[in-house]
Length: 119
Image (cartoon, rainbow, N blue to C red; front, side, top):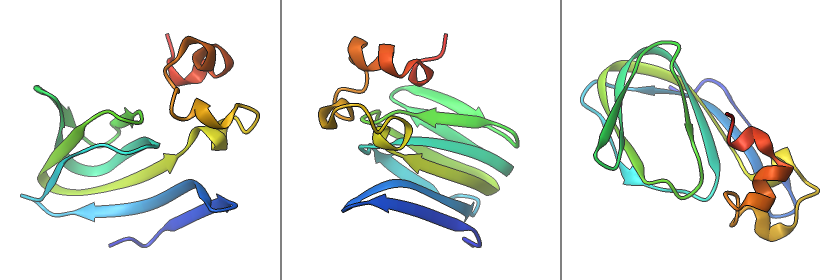
């Protein structure tokens, strides 16, 4: 059930997308990557996030941040409700050059957008 969603675009490019999602026990999100940032807040239930050979258990209140290009997937352990917020770098910093999204982890981008790599 996706009873909450919102998005905004600038030209032909989506700036952000937000949706409430429900996933059923035993569901699988195959390993994938994408070209945007994603913050996933677990509202209820339990899931296992997969990052390479690592697994992270996510329970209610867990906030999972996934940067562009990071291969990840998930297994739903119990019926789960979550809030997914996906956004590109232009949404956070429209003043950065167009190639900054592709080079988000480059030191010059991180110095202009330090919140992408909190210490």
